Image 1 (cartoon, rainbow, N blue to C red):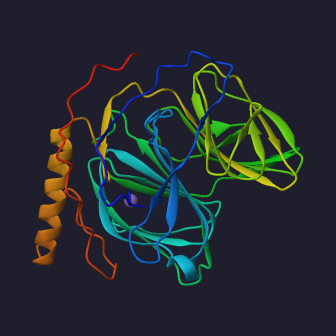
Image 2 (image 1 turned 180 degrees about the vertical axis):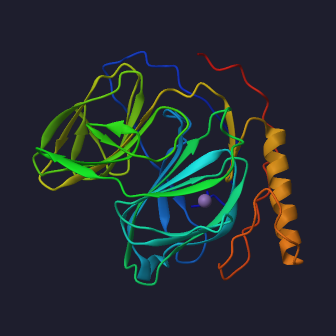
Length: 334
Ligand code: MN
């Protein structure tokens, strides 16, 4: 999905360092972000927030739905660019058709991962299919580390295996956990998993101690390491946390567990671009604007972002950049 902010701020994102009270669970409350348009969906964002902008390399987390397409109009995101990141599309309900400038055409379906690696540049469109009544899922981004951020773009569709253990059913779509493993290509140590909890269930699961984790609650009256966490909120667990304790109320629960080693790179994120400096992001924006103008004139597509074929409409122009120019900040702690 595109970053749907009509007037997105430019953000410097870095790994957090303030984990003074290791006993307390930090709960990230979601921020509502309305999609543009008349019958707009609203998404609930827990990354980036002011107080926390990265969990491992996870740098963007939107939760949406369940949303009746008849009321919301569904999803129709015209071709738009990305740089320096991977998009992780994971659905609980509905179906979305993905097309990108590599020529990929694939469906996003519940329980199946679409992983798009933007690397130095890609463009794509996303449209919910006509058969979709309800859209419900998460859109996540991973920041690529310096060594991989200029890599060639790529697209992968992965159907992870799932396993049940007592009161919990698990699908690991990124990384390895609980004996499950995803073949999806990532560039830093990471975890992405969906857990389904039975009503009244209580589980304790081992965590990788080098990782920090975010536990995004989709449904159920869920506690995370004894803290109640509301719907679409995310519990943050700092590095050194060795166990994830979950309890679930009287209805079934679902959570998405994100984890990774702290990135320790300062990234600049604006709209759909991740770079390292303001000037670099300005250059990405200028290239995209020039490319969509050239495409409109019928120019060939030997460009950074390429061209999405099969989308019935024009690409998305970039918003205007904010007037405030970000200054470089201190080097992140290692
Ligand atoms: Mn996108």
